[in-house]
Length: 187
Length: 192
Image (cartoon, rainbow over the protein chains, first blue to last red):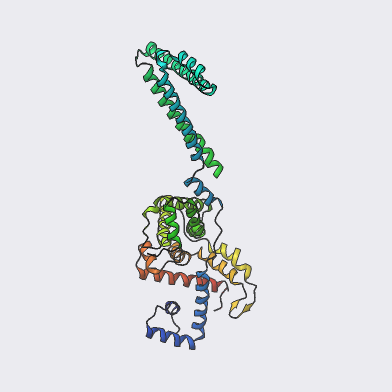
């Protein structure tokens, strides 16, 4: 009696044979020790394959993915941005209200000193200091551009260019330095 | 439409619940890592690919169609990612040197007693050895064994993933099992 092919035995095991083939295969297996043994080996193999032996993945996978998708750093960055934006708004507000451009800074300071609390007074003092320092820098750059390159763009435009360069620099520093530090910590 | 556990988690993820995503990742991390690792057999690349996989899943989760099983959708993304990695990096994924496996893992057990037709090994040991032998078989068989048994896919799903006809998938899986059985017999893990 010729033994069954492995394919037939596997088909029998997976119940993928038609009714006639299935019965014939079953009858053969019952009377053939070699095919019975082959079936038993395939059964054991099937049982083992169905319960895969899994390697434990490195623990940092989940941590890395969570940090990448939900970075904690962004909360800090948003908070800093919010504070900076509020501060800028405050400066702009005070600037517009007291019309610093027309040299009424001292007058404004006097007003706040007499009528408002010391906190507001200090804020105005600080803002006026920042404003005058920035204004001095813009004026200097403007003069330098005018003398060296004969370019007349005005203090306000110089200020805008200066602010743009500052924002770009901050963005670069954020990307290159902070994200690198964060990634190296996560790895 | 009744949602299964994965789909309920996806609903939560779409609402912005990061804990739901963490739960989903914990559930699939082992299987995904194991599939990738057994395909490319490089720890560092497997780790990176698993991380990339979960980041990708999160970014494309809005595309998931609730009519299908999440696992099948995710495994397809994983399979394509591994195949892309292999193509791009021309990773050598041919079988391991079978001699290594025999010497290191199998021959250690040849002195055991025969009982009830099999060597008297614990099922866990046999499992571990069989899966190590899986790593030694040619990749065209190995990938199908992994898709079938590690990811629990049906023949037609595997055919859909790999682009092979269902008949070829079945034949290759049968052939893979024959190879595995032969290896186990050769090393006296199974009785003739």
